[in-house]
Image 1 (cartoon, rainbow over the protein chains, first blue to last red):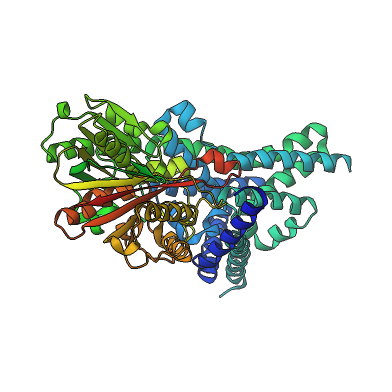
Image 2: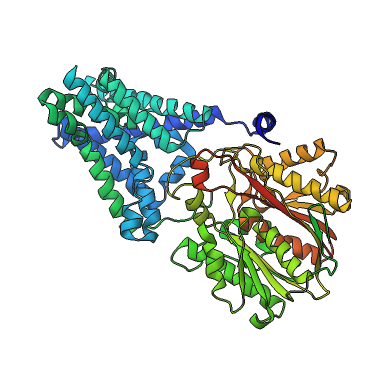
Length: 149
Length: 127
Length: 331
């Protein structure tokens, strides 16, 4: 079976598999994502107020807030707690900045068995590297567009 | 309860709803497509950059505070607004502005990840 | 003798001893009371998960020899493989032993492939005794095929859980124990499934193909077997397998059992069951063989399935080719 026949055949099979798939629990997933995501943002807001109270303001305040959140994300990853939250909350814990911290820390911890330089350091950004690459590229693009337009 | 207290509580509510809402959109996308976590992060960050560039994200940040800056789209906002501010100063700042604005986050992630890797080991999971 | 894709072992090589070891999560299920060693800690007193996997394999091989009263001098070959790159667990475990080693890779169907090859070598009279063993470790497989362990990502409900465990058995020319009667060599089947989380759906066609080929070649019916045992299709894959064989006129729903389904308590809304090379290896070499020795099952068709993908191939958008080898076991 090659070419067109196999294509049709595969399509039939894939459609059939789709009917057999266990249903995604949309409501439960979405509620968990909304709740946990909102909660992490509230924690961020709380930290922001605390730091504001401590006398920070402007860019410094925003930077310090994200540093504290990233620390929390890294620390919970190290403790082995963050992936449990992630399994339950899905996007609720992936999308906040703590999820970015998790995606940097988890490979760093995982690959340190392959050495500090080629393991831990080189593979630290296996997941999060894409964010830096696309972020920097699009940032430069936006800067240039604003410069010339 | 005085007005200031109420204001703070209201700010928390706004952060919760907007931040939760952004995560909810991501979850709906995950549910209906087979995008993995890494791709979701990139797309939301790019969405943050694009929305900031056309001037839609700044009002959201003013409105929701941490609700808009804590999600990864806030990272995009940081990059884009840094670049836009830099563009006002000239060519060099237009290029370096974005990463300079985001330097706190990236530095923190690298330093803390390094420290955690020194202390912790990854462990196997049971569920 | 060969008919179709099935080779018949006239001299009926026998599995005289077997051993299995399983991890702490697996212990809570059926394996807990049948495996020879159950681990409290999945690190197995090693520094990395890969070393733990290697140690499990090596332990299982020496335990299988010990239980049959064999020494290293009695063994002619070790046939083994695992899921890691360049089958390092198997090769590294083999350096503990003073007899030859044949490395095989057939993903999760490594157990049936190595029994088949061992039986073929013994049957032909080239060797007298072979050890067939394989294993997998959740943590090392997760890193190999998916993400770092601590990354907080969700598991879709189609996903399966890699079994931490290893199993091995000794195949000899002695006339006692569990006979390996024949073996059906599998073809690689690819029905175009690309979802790496849905292994059951990818592997079911391969299992169906080999099982039906086996019935055709041996002239048997599903009802001739006490049990048709598949490796790690999971709940979803098993359902698809039953549908696929039913379509072609073979009703295996009565006596089909899937190792992946019985190794854990499966909640279908959350996950589909166990997977990995260790899944079929541990279940077969503990629970199934014990029951066969006790005479509860007389005739079993063991068809483990393997998904022959790598992270590179799935990154390049390739679909998942799968394979299944079957052996018929009798007491």
